[in-house]
Length: 199
Image (tube, rainbow, N blue to C red):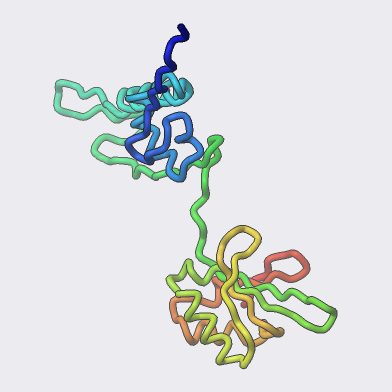
């Protein structure tokens, strides 16, 4: 007689509640990684190697950061700094692939795009770097210049304000008067593909 088939035991992730094999396709794989390394290391061997490499890097960093002190009471300066002074540690953010992310310099970029030969749109980017709410700014721009203004996502997935019409001639004064934290030196125009200071 044929043997009765047994049910398959499926291991479900405690974080995202998907089967462990499908965690990588779930909405929060980064949160699932520690659980997977602990409970299902055979399913994702790359995660285990990655975790071991991170641990090795942490240990290496700890060895590098520890200094050797002499018994005379003077601290030996680590790698070229004077005794008693500490070099400021600058936090560097790294992107995937080891690229270093530069900190964005707050600046407002204004660009005029022509469409259908006569119609033009003025695009304002970078207001959010000065703490300006883009929805409020678009309303104020629309009222001031009596045009349509809206917040849209640009080609780089960052939000920007599109204002109908060519208002580039007057917008610098309006921005500096309405939001005093925006200086004229931080406003740039894009003309012929080049960034030109507004001042």
